[in-house]
Every structure is written in C-alpha cells, then in structure tokens.
Length: 132
Image (cartoon, rainbow, N blue to C red; front, side):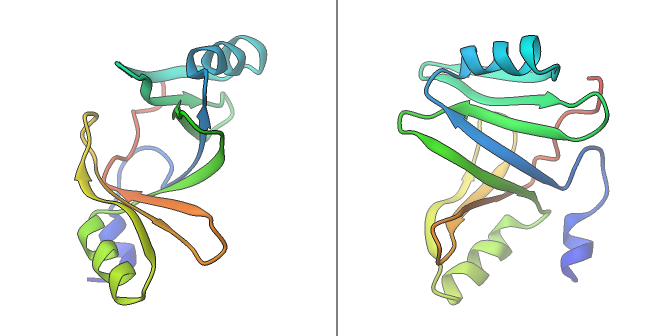
C-alpha cells in the first residue's frame, strides 16, 4: 500500500499544526474571541484540555491542548496506519516519544522526534467535519 493510499480520504486537513498551552482554556478564548477561529471540538480531562480543535473561517484548522511544560508546537499528520509509521521510525532509529496508543478522542497515535528535535504525531484522527 502506498503512503498516499494509507492516508485515505475524508474530511479535514491531512496535516495539522498543533500548539501546547499551560492555559489551554485561556488560549481557546484568545483563539476564538480575539483571533476569530471557531471552536470545533474541545475534549476536557482532569489535566485540562486533552484535545482541542479550532477552524479558520477561510479554511484549515489548528489542534491544541494543555501541556505542563512550554511547548512551542508540533505537527499532527493523518495516516490510516500509525503502526506502520511506528515500525518505520523504529527501524530508522528515530526517537519514539509515545506509541502506538489509542486516545480518548478516538485516534490511534504514534509520536516521534526528528533529529533536530521537532515533534510529529501520526494518527488516524482526521478532525471534526468543518462546521461540526
């Protein structure tokens, strides 16, 4: 199966910029109330926002969540087969931070760090339907 076939079709972007906030609730207010994003999904847990999504009115989206440590950002990439990505990452000597793991919001994820320290999460979650 090709990488293109693995990603499959579906709604929403295939690559999501992601931000971590110590105060994700405050960030949500800023993103929606000040910048003009619209709230698409917010999953809250004991530690704060476990998974959040906002949509830009002209297209695209942003994922965010509560992080204890300052995180400048990471990239979420939609894939139909995160286990395959995990196997490739391990075989290639990548540093695997997490995974594969099933999340509370319905995704199967694997998170790796590239040689320069950038974080990538590959998962099955495609995002909410626009306007949903």
